[in-house]
Amino acid sequence: MFQFRRPLMAALATGLSLAALLGPAAAQNIHPDVLELKLALAVADTNVNPTTSSLFKLAESMGFYEKHGLKIDIVSLDGTPQAVAALNSGAVDIADIAIDSAIRLRADNDVPVRGFVAIAMGSAFLIAAKDDITTVDDLVGRSYAIADNGSLDHNLTEAVLGTYGIASDGPNYVAIGSPDVRVQALAAGQVDATTVSFGTYMTIAGTPGVHVLVQPDAYSERAPAMAKFIAALDGTIETKREALQRFTDALTDAARTMEANREGWVDAMVVARDDLSRESLEATSELNATRWCINGCMKHENLEKAVDFIYAKSDFKDVAKISVDDIIDLSFTQKTLETLGTAGGNGLDAR
Image (cartoon, rainbow, N blue to C red; front, top):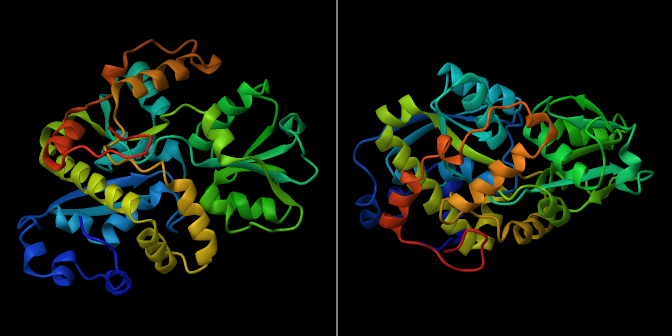
């Protein structure tokens, strides 16, 4: 595993490949053939979000996809429902989607979808609100910005608020789009509260009249441990298995590098997000520390708990019951761990 250096980071920012930067030895590790995949992300904001989801775009700009013989076309869409629709229609090969969406696709519509790797454990979200909202109970009857009905932030927030005894119709949910739009609407006083990642919140931190109502750790503790994974249709798994395996290898390789060198991640994010201060990114890197998926985050027991959590929700009482094994394929992360070895440490995904 190479270590980041500031000159290296500056060169990577120009788009140079790992082979060009690290010489012939690195070139030997880059596949001579390149396979292509189209990936849908459920967020219209084209900025690199300073959470573990930054992995998707940093893996591209830092050459990890190239290293593993991939060309990834990233399509940013406005919310989970659009990403699910793109996957279901065949417009993309793979999509980062909510697990509850995968359950509905399989159980209600018999769509053969399976998650095969993930980039996060635990939620990176927080609840931000106007200063006059001092308790979670105060959210009842107030406007609450979400991406869309059924989006990940919407579903997770309903689940989290439910643990506080807040009914799903307590807040007045308003679908207004991507995280950057939601947080700016809050900062402008146009809505009363919203759910965004702690990285997105950093863009308005210190705005008068706005504060964090539910901190990231508290939100994560009340949300399911697994909320999303990258999924593909069974047909894609059959016809593009090698490309999906390389994608799994590339994400795991990149995640291990990010987890091992926080300063390197901060350096990369300073280049990707010049609107954020180094100090705020350093604080964010601390929050990210245990959330990198250094082993692919596809432990059967965690996924099973996530499915049980979802089926316990009131809006799933009429959804046909399926097994976690109906919506996952663990063969990709298993092969990655055989190839790259398992990673230990303090991360939630350590083995």
